[in-house]
Image (cartoon, rainbow, N blue to C red; front, side):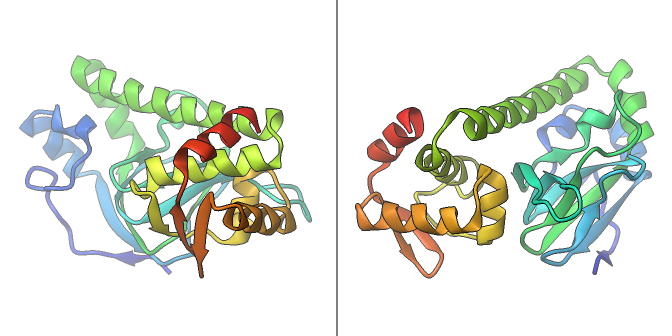
Length: 232
């Protein structure tokens, strides 16, 4: 259940995206007047596939997933996983007027929702801001392309190795992390079945590539994991 938090001020916020750091005080004030800060519990839907894209979402804290919902009875596909400091919804700035994905909280998360027309007005007036937005969008797209290649060109071990490397580098920033994703999440992130996820993680543990202690993952042999990712 989402919770509306006390209003903050974009001009004094210490957890602001780089994109917004390049705005002047008047532009930040305009942003501040057209946003709301919401807190979401684990599992809450933040944006629903098929709904109108009225806001961009800046993650102040937490962990969220962006995924395509499958048809009835079919699994979905996680397109990306985002941590604090990321902006979601940039593809809707000049594209579709509706979200073509669902966003939900993996952990308890706090997000700023910024009215999308406010961002559209800022882009032509601040070139540095426009470049920052394009850079962020390009990075998100490249990560999505990597995921697509991973699930269409690699065997199961290679998919899981790539996923674990991504989580260590992009999400948890450590070779030792408490995995927030469920087995179903991992399956939808790698294009595998839940049973295959369990089997591959068990194999990685038994061969000394990782340790798995009740969901706390430690990558023990990163070079080997990279080789599995590359050639798996």
